[in-house]
Length: 121
Ligand SMILES: [Zn+2]
Image 1 (tube, protein in one colour):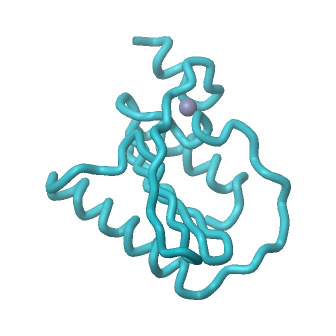
Image 2 (tube, helix red, strand yellow):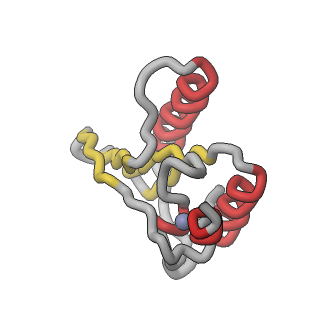
């Protein structure tokens, strides 16, 4: 999805249906990916509590390819159980300098999307 309101809708649907959400986003040469699993990881709203201001931004055509392939790889790994998922980790792709880094993402106990799931346990 290319906007946060729709991403938040998917986030809530994934929580309600208890299905994983494979998040990817791009901006210019850069992108990010994480795998969200209810009961194990932060949800999208935990990671991004506020949507950024809507804007029109450039995207280099190959960036969605890079990020989309990583998302697809995550789905395959989830289905097959092979490897380590990007669960609890946000992978950040710097396409200008061709560097990958990752940051740990943590659940927000007061999250308005997934907080209720955790309070009920
Ligand atoms: Zn959350």
